Length: 318
Image (cartoon, rainbow, N blue to C red; front, top):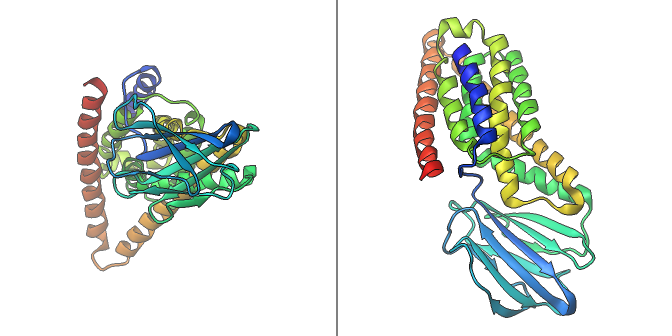
């Protein structure tokens, strides 16, 4: 595992210095900027091209036409006239689902206040309120953090690898805490090459799952691994935040809320994995079955990480 820790430190350095392009969340972003006389400038942005996904005209507002699209299908701007302002009006994002999982809607009021809401396929509509407190902003970003973990297969596989490597419940949660502390330090800054480094972290951890010599040191090496690679995963979280944006009037509550949502998602996933392993341990074939499951998990994580690494390196340098 020393080689993994050494390479992990190199990954952090590469991720911090690289300018290559990487992937983030599959998120859409709609900004509605209110001006004088009921005019509204709308900007629609997606992280991946997604035909069929887009905002529906705000209820009670008149379209003033689209302007140029500077980035192909991923950025579009258009103007609206909403007499009386946006307060109390309903905005809908159509087509959310497997391609784009959520949309962040931000409303910039003429007085400088900012309202925000995370929309999903199950709840694609929002009635814009007249005001929004910092606690409501924080609650929205908690939802966004949970969604990011629930839809982030690479982060979930890394957590799975840590659980399979460390095994003992107390050490698992110590490792998870170290992972959280580490990625919290780095998710307020973004390095685009982090996604390829995340994929490589899966491979390196998978190599030690099932190794008897490595597992004897898992109690202290697990938290050490989590601290090192957590910095890289935190950069991936930062990429997600850079894509959806933060409300200017409640940056702190949005960051805390997003971090809390990520932590909730991680703990829930780890508990489910550990309950599954505990159920296997109670079976008659437990002495053979659990190690085989761990070995199968290592192959799953390693093969998937290898595929993602090649895919993301291709995107980075293409």
